[in-house]
Length: 152
Image (cartoon, rainbow, N blue to C red; front, side, top):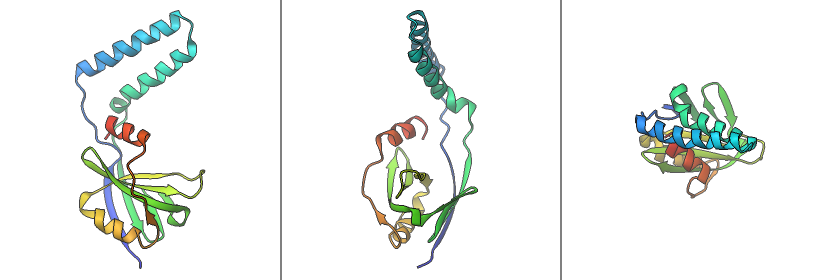
């Protein structure tokens, strides 16, 4: 019943954006920010600043290499170890051109695991994980899908 899988992946794939993309979103968010300040709507201004951070996030943050080890007891991502007994099901799905493994916690306070997996390991990982937790056939959550379309 024991198994072990190793792989490396990037937390996201950097896609260069055209200058038009930055000009468009900078103009929209910048104009909205000026309007928010002039209308004294400071909550809207704060939300817009957070939006600007997300728009330009990928330019300031380089993709990190993740070292993943999965066995019958745990999943280890870099130095973080997650006990699989704390999780009740998993799902494997494709967003754009990447496959992802998502493992759902039993407790609200545990971290959901969301990690890219290589295509050649999908069936082996699915077969081995089915030995210890069930698979949930579902599409990715809407926020996961939005995030992965912005930063694959």
